[in-house]
Length: 97
Image 1 (tube, rainbow, N blue to C red):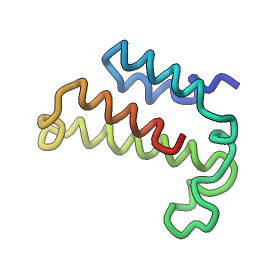
Image 2: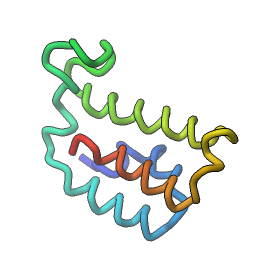
Image 3: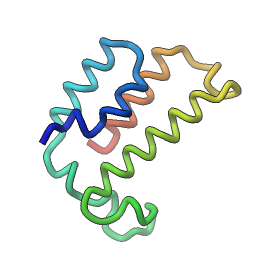
């Protein structure tokens, strides 16, 4: 499996090439089970799309998308440098890894 390809869209949100390269290296280092397990076993704290096989990846991709939308909002995003935004996206991609 090409682990980095799973997050191809999310990696495009990262503008700093050095950060992007670091993120790609770390994504490739994530354990294989990360791509297979659910985000939660009970469903108590996660929506239904995050349950079942591959749920953790779907949860991660949703968190990154939400953050990217918020960081693109002029009221919120203007408070952060591009590097800070890049690091937030990177942290979210890796947060459950």
